[in-house]
Image 1 (cartoon, helix red, strand yellow):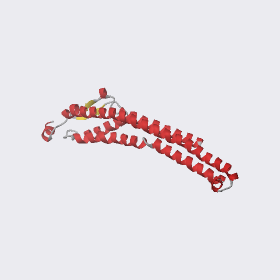
Image 2 (cartoon, one colour):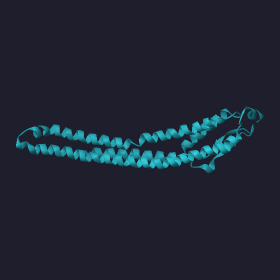
Image 3 (cartoon, one colour):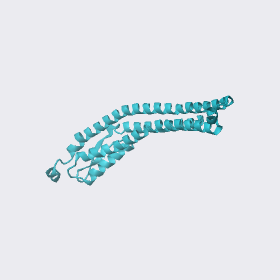
Image 4 (tube, helix red, strand yellow):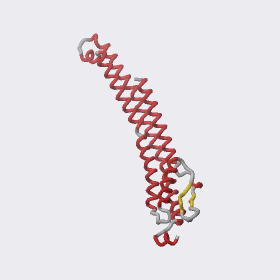
Length: 211
């Protein structure tokens, strides 16, 4: 049982570290605000896209926006589609985090169940159940040994559950803080699109034709 618990704790720490890494990635999606800018086509002077530095999630958002702007160059741009591209990529990361957050808890519960199963298996294999139910006083020693094995296995397995509860709680608290920072960065980026990008784009069909 201690070996199984040790393996489960290692798995819990692995998923916790992976989740924290994902949280940091979410927090830093829009961290490079000073690098944002608007690119123009040198021939038509239409907006050809945006540029800026960031992690792979921001690069994916930028590529989605640039693909839309490139396919609709000189046309009226729907801001809701730009916002949808941002939300879609951010929600994808957030869903991954929400999926990974309770994994340490599930692993801990699985470890507890494994400890109970092993303890009960020990009771059955050693005949301790039969000794416990029999009335012979001479069988109490074997019965006590079996019960001790069961309780020891459960005690060890509970360590995995405690570790799972702790890591899940810490992960939830961290994500609450990182999500606020990530949402703040996303709102800043959307405000930048409205303040900087939209004025460079045609506002209606006649404006698009004039340009």
